[in-house]
Amino acid sequence: MAARAAAKRVEKAQEPDAAEADEARATGTGKGKSTDKGKSTDEEKSTGKAKGTGKAKGTGKGKSTDKEKGAAEKEPVGTSTAAKRSPARSGTLGAVLAVLVVVGLVATVLLGLQYLDGEKARQARTGALATAKKAAPVILSYDHRHLDKDFAAASGHLTGSFRDKYRKTTSTVVMPTAKKYRGVVKATVAKPPSGKAPAASVVSASPDRAVVLLFMNQVSKSTQVSGPRVDLNRVRMTLVRVSDSWKVSAVDAL
Image (tube, rainbow, N blue to C red; front, side):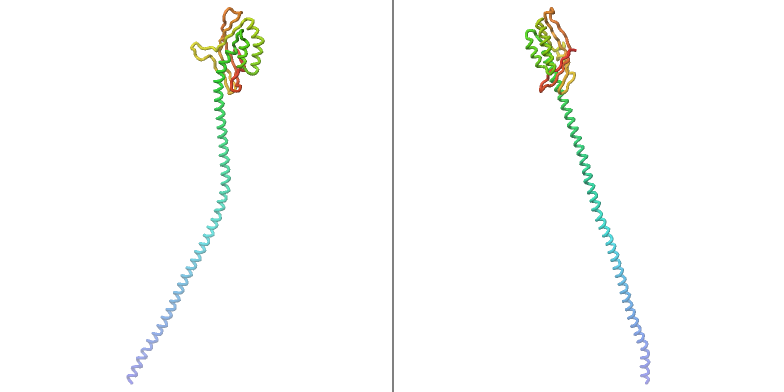
């Protein structure tokens, strides 16, 4: 009896422990479940945040992409505008260059013409002066013994109306007087005592016309004078270019 009573006491004493153990199990299970729920909740939150963030980023990228597309679409417009302006600028530049080229060509032509005129004038001075020195003694000389020959030689140096006037004067005035008084006139271009070039110089000259001043010595003989007479005359001779030679168009005594 005493043993049974002791066994019952032990069982009663163990019952609260078992109850506590059951409660502890129940509590642990609840806590575990709540922990799992917490974990799931945290995971969902983190997942939600991640998804939200992803969406936000995705949205941001979408916006930036639209902006970039807009910028990309605008750039061709600017490029096309620049392309439209570029031909205009190129056309203006081309026009300016064309004008400069034309001006340069005109200037070159003018300078070339001036050079050619200057060169022709220089040649005219040389050619006209040489012709004047050669023609003056022939034109201003004659001998009653061969008047026709002398006058014909002189006419070969003349041109235009002056030649006609010379022929008329020599045939109507000079020839009868020279034959009557046996006149002889010998003309030469004066030379300085130093023996330098004859006293003749070009007053003016152009490619087709020149004026030459000459100092002439004329020695005259006739039955009207007892001896030779020397006259020093200044003569202005005008010459013009005829084909490739120079001819005398006027002679004036000064």
